[in-house]
Each structure stands twice: as structure tokens, then as C-alpha cells.
Picture (cartoon, rainbow, N blue to C red):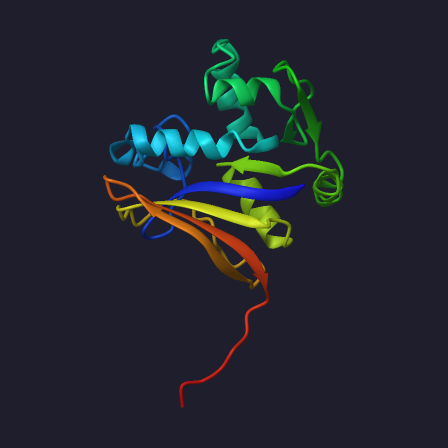
Length: 203
């Protein structure tokens, strides 16, 4: 399977707590819920369509807890988000989670997360999707395991907060595969991993 990451991000690269203040208030982050003003029905439908492409989902512990507290309660199989999330395999990366009640969930990463994720990628199928899961995403970028990055860039600058691309990630180039702008200013861009950077000079 191809490992894909979908992430909401600000113009200055912040990814912390886009959906609400309770998602991740660590380090006193005061801007939780910053993406809400930029979403509309068209963007929501497009995001749901992409989520529906997954054969399975890979989530960090915090994101898993948020999803598992909400989506299993949405039982309509025709729901374009709840349907896929509830019916397809889910893998949660955690060293501390002992059990997972959400149907179809398996805990991985107890001793060697890189090995476990590599094994998942080697299984047949289309997409293994990560949504949010900032710490997990940064870790996997640092090991060169993410094949596709989908960024929902919102027209806002926050100045503080956790960022996706840090000095822990591996240098890499990406190919722009798709880009779409939405009415409230969000640009949804899909980048495919294209290898190591190359360098030159304008002199």
C-alpha cells in the first residue's frame, strides 16, 4: 500500500489543533480550532472523497482517541466519513495503549514502529492513510516512509505551534500531482515523493 498523509496546515507551517482547542493544548497553544473558519461544504465533500479512497488508516494515539470517541457513534453506513472509518482496518501507533474498542483496530509500534509500518506498506492494496497525527507524521517523514503528502493550506498565520516539517525530516523533493483552490482560500495540494533534492546555482 502507498502511505499517504493528509494534514491541515497554516501559511507558516503550524499543524497543531486545527479542529478545536481540546485537540492539543500542549505548550499553552492558544489557537486551537484555527481551520474552522475556512471550511465549507465543497471542501468537506472533497476531503470526504479523498478519505473514502483509503484501504486502511494509520493514526497516532491522540488522533485515534479523538476519532474513536466520535465516529463509532455515527452508524449510518451511507455517511461518507463514518462509513469508511468504521468499516475499514485501522492501525494505531502507540506504546502505551493496551486495548482498542473501535471495531477493526489493531495496535502497532510497541517495539519497532518503522518495521511495523514498513510491513503494512508491503501489503497489497491502494492507500494506507494518515490523517492529522502530527507526532506520528513527523516521525515517519523522518524515516522516509510517507509516499504522498496532501496539504490543506489555510490562509492564516499563527506564529506559534507544532510544525510538520522540522529538522528531523529527511531531505526530499516532491512532485505536485494535484492542486485545487476553494472559495474560502484553502488550497488543497497533493505532492508525490520524487526522491532526494538536487542542487545547482544561478551564477
